[in-house]
Length: 80
Image 1 (spheres, one colour):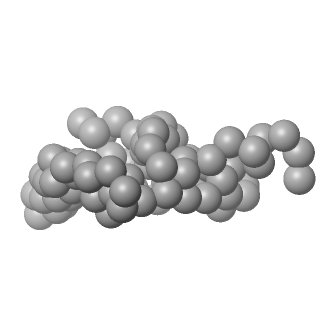
Image 2 (cartoon, rainbow, N blue to C red):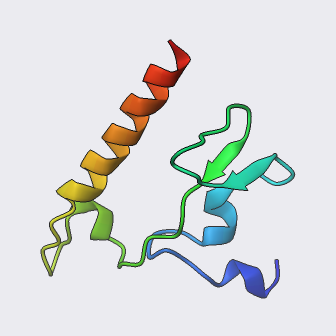
């Protein structure tokens, strides 16, 4: 391991959470989801509980999840 393993998203290090080693990947383009590749999302800035809505400080994270659902719905439409 080297210094690249230090960066984290508040939950796990980003080096290990984005793409399996050696797997094909591209940065996420919401208008062009590529099958057969890891479409890598940008790193979310927050603490350990941010994506769960917070623990000590409340975060309204509903828009984040609704956005993901909309993107998945559009991806499914493109396949039919």
